Image (cartoon, rainbow, N blue to C red; front, side, top):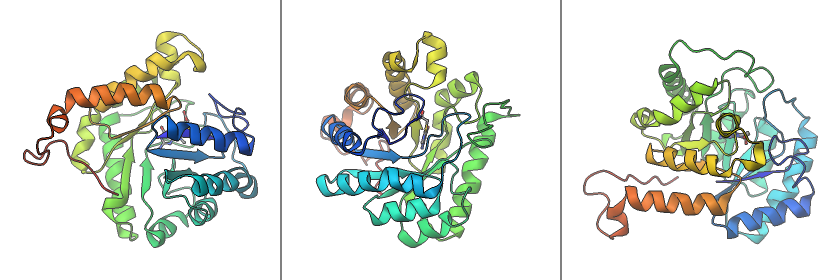
Length: 278
Ligand code: 8Y7
């Protein structure tokens, strides 16, 4: 999943693609680089960031989504917590709702996703972007995230969202201490039991900066390492800025991990290498 931020203030690439044409061009470049999904967002969710009005968010992303839809078959996800924005984005050609609040900030999000039968990304976050990094604390991080997933899946399914439409995301950096992020990636496999694909967003995030002691734009190698390890620990989707490099790294990791598939033998015989269709 390639990141397309149409914002003046995103933590890593804010303002780079704020201009509509530049954003569309960047999106099409990411498709050429091998992205399978583009995640289009108009509101920064970096720690401490403020909300923006619906109209402003729409003004930023709708033309970009429409134009990408006209020029490409790429799967588009809309990164928003607002039902109105998700609704208009779906109308403009978006396919997936990426809601960092797990459909909780806006009461209309659950019924919208159910009605439109849109795939949804349910991400774990403690608190909200304004306050989440103030003092995150867990009695038992993995158990907490796991039960959060279970609750949100139950809530979604009881609201009419089909289980098969759900993607889970541990929310790296969203109300997590440094060690929590490492712990989640290292133990990603435990969420496999929930039977849904796992998305991990780690690209250039601050836990990587802390290890390599580099600013956001110099975190590529660290991000690749985290991406490859996430895949080897069971991630199905990785949300990244650097699509070309990540794609190559993951293709090699995937070939090593799933040699059967590359040998063209059946991948379903053993029940391993499960593939998900949304
Ligand atoms: C994530 C995300 C961001 C993530 C999902 C950033 C919008 C911060 N991170 N969505 N969004 N998962 N699903 O670093 O980890 O891009 S914003």
